[in-house]
Length: 149
Image (cartoon, rainbow, N blue to C red):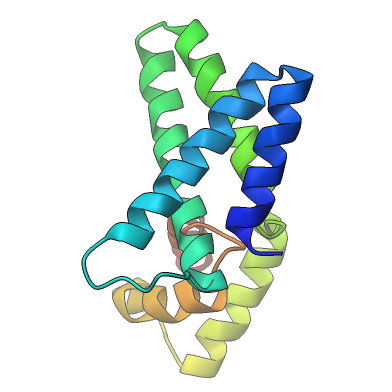
């Protein structure tokens, strides 16, 4: 079952169960997927990699919004975004723990022969591809800096 079909089925379940938070998150995902499918030059069917990128982008946007809302003292809006984060995370591959990311990063750094923070720009594309869907770029970057500190 493709992600779009899964989302459609889950929207129906959320409607019947009257789960507003879940429904809001699912509709946001569906909207982002439909937008990506209708972009100029895009394929009708998105592959698994493109779907994961869309979900990661949605997740990142929600997390940034949560930070902004909390900084402004708007806990009500932050809670709404947090509920959507939980829905989006259901459709992403299981994230790695910081310890798992760090150990795999150490292997990548050793294999590539990188020696210090000056190689961070070279490491990031390799690491992003390696951790695709399992870790975000910000976490990877922070852990790489920690390794070289």
